[in-house]
Image 1: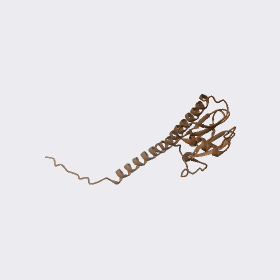
Image 2: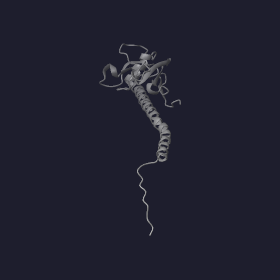
Image 3: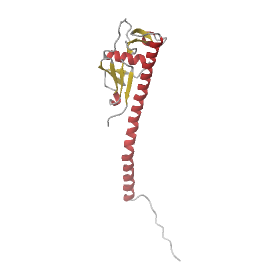
Image 4: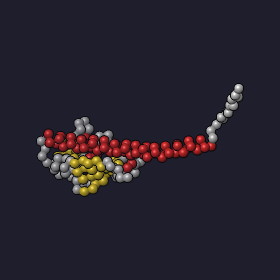
Length: 180
């Protein structure tokens, strides 16, 4: 009769461990860029959503201005009911939001960063934080006055993303293509 010899295996060999480590390293190298893209995709979605809400708010303010029979500048137009002066906007000669300031102004214009911030905060009630700082710990967006009647709101966590507003025609453009 043949005798069976039993070998006892009590662990992994060094070669087996090295192979497993190499496989795990390759998987990590492949997976890491995908995880980083997920974070960037989340930032893009955030800016697109905020830009869409801002655009809708600008459009609604323009519609309210028009339905009230306005055809030129409107001072302290109540956009949101029961919001007091926080729900009022000064509408420019083209029928689009220019600022939120209670004192009377015959021909309101969007002409500085404070105007950009006031339009943002009024249009987007419970708005994402906005300031003149590019520090994400200070605010989520940085408002800039870029040209006559135009603002750009940069997304501080990824400053290549922004929302552009032109108060001469109500145009809102969301730049949601990050530069790599």
